[in-house]
Length: 192
Image: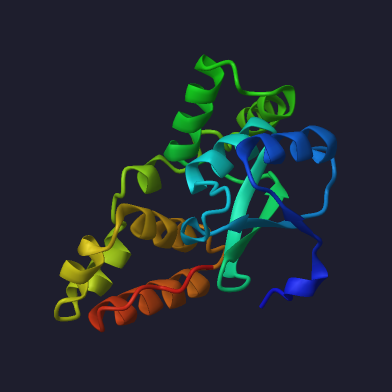
């Protein structure tokens, strides 16, 4: 569990605020909590899509989200580390480049990922292809397969990425068992 007090909070009220912060701090290595206002407040609301555009432009990524209070949320944002890029992020980066919004730090993060072979690292995950061991585990439980397939593509992609990232066969088997057991109950794997 992440302690909310172990990271600084940065409150923004617009994409321009976030861009200004990233222009100054994009090279820092420490994650921060990005604090934004909820739509109902009437205070400047910043959509998830706008946040992602700014973060990706500067080579940062979004992470764990938390409720801060009745009017604000906070999301852990971090400089991009050596990890695979999803198709949605690759597509977003291409759009930002076409719109001349991708900044040098964002381009550098892409180049680093391409050099490390992480730019196109999980095409099966991007395609939502079920590996045979997961499909067998889902098919073995009544309703698990149907429930899993009905989950949003983003959730299925996260689960597939989580399973694919297992370093040991025993870890992979445990993750598959968890995903199948929860799907059989109509539940999602918690965000990880």
